[in-house]
Amino acid sequence: MKFKRTERIGAIVKILSDNPNKIYTLSYFTNRFNAAKSTISEDLLVVKSVFEKLHLGKVITISGAAGGVKYIPKTSKQENAEFLMELCNRIKDEGRILSGGFLYLIDLIYDPGTVSKIGKIFASNIDYTDADYVVTMETKGIPMALMTANAMNLPLVIIRKDIKVSEGPTLSMTYVSGNSGKLESMSLPRKALKPDSKVIIIDDFMRGGGTIKGMIDLMKEFSAEVIGIGVFISTMKPEEKMVEDYISLIQLDVQGNEIIVEPNRDILADTEPEEDTEDMYI
Amino acid sequence: MKFKRTERIGAIVKILSDNPNKIYTLSYFTNRFNAAKSTISEDLLVVKSVFEKLHLGKVITISGAAGGVKYIPKTSKQENAEFLMELCNRIKDEGRILSGGFLYLIDLIYDPGTVSKIGKIFASNIDYTDADYVVTMETKGIPMALMTANAMNLPLVIIRKDIKVSEGPTLSMTYVSGNSGKLESMSLPRKALKPDSKVIIIDDFMRGGGTIKGMIDLMKEFSAEVIGIGVFISTMKPEEKMVEDYISLIQLDVQGNEIIVEPNRDILADTEPEEDTEDMYI
Image (tube, rainbow over the protein chains, first blue to last red):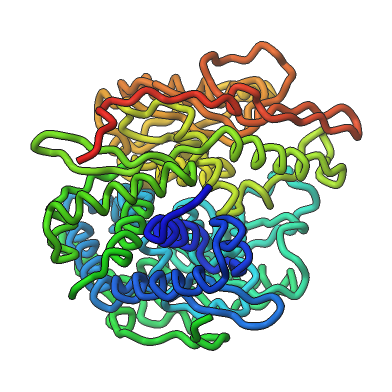
């Protein structure tokens, strides 16, 4: 089948966009579109400019034998600001307050469009160059962790609370929930992580940080290193958390009927993440 | 900012592809790209042909006041066949057999790329025209249910096993697991579904069908109607399930050390789903 130039460009955008962080060789495109290398190289220049002009991320070229092009999703400062401000406004609704100062948020954190954007923001603000997995704990963090894993092109690992899970030999651990002070349990099948892995932890909510601290401890039992932590909402109190070096997108405080909620200003800063490859044209 | 024709086309592909089943007006594109209506209409013809030539789904035009264009993801017969055959080959590995005849599958069903394709196959084979939600039960079905919800542009609802969940007034129910014959519980916050909703149920695994039957019963308590059921893997035995009218992508039987696994032939048939709108150009 023959493709016109405009069709090839549309198709390359679609393929790269659907498969973030996956390397495609020039030959893949020359075969798929029955076109010369020089033609595809020109197409890729246009594709690159589409992503940059729309602030949708970068298409970069990796040289060498295993080289090719890949799409790195990246959100812009302005897009982050608009999206997080809109989310904050939706969270502010008094009708969301549940007894115990909790907030009803599952309409937001289970919404595919919302978690897809959250995943891209995490991928834009956490360095996952060396990461092997995205790790989360069931249940409410799973949708945003999956979308983060998708943007980072990493497998997702879900820690279970249930210790009766039948997934072969399983490592279980107890931890103290920073919130309730209660003893809780978490478990993960032995097979879930390769030894000496590097992982990114993603979760929906952090109050004291006890759960994330527990996840870090569990990772040690798997000889895995936590190289990045992202939480969607962190509470302003307690100020002192049980973990350091995390990023949170939104900060929250609930005082009676008043909900104080604001985006994390660091996330709105337009920082360029480090890149492991040269940003050059083919 | 001015865009070249090739850039506009790449950009439109990206926007539609990232937001399946969301309607974009012609004005949205004329404003975003600072271009005339006639120009955008021509671009959309090319975009339409990109999706069709690559068998990635359809871009259709909805006429009327609330009209515009939207992208409907649809997988092709050939793509389904290749993907499901490859999955079957990976599932066949004897090393996956756990005690009790269970299979270790979480490396597959937590993989973003895999569940993204599964979601598109469900969206291609279940009629969700009138659906309001995708519903699943924690935990292992969540990733594929989220990606199905994403492809269908519907919110996701997650039924919890834990009855202590603090999400406001919650409806809890017991059901008999078809597999173990044990009494299990499921619960869902009152707020999770609007009254008189229509829902699609997605789950990862079905043996007897007791869990899905329980979900259908829970939906009745919310005055919701189940209009479609998709399961990733169903077992060949028992042949008689507690639910009817479901589609499963893969059929499985484990006999000692032998894993019999095959794709569902119905899914590989190239059926055209019904459309609620005319398939015409702008």
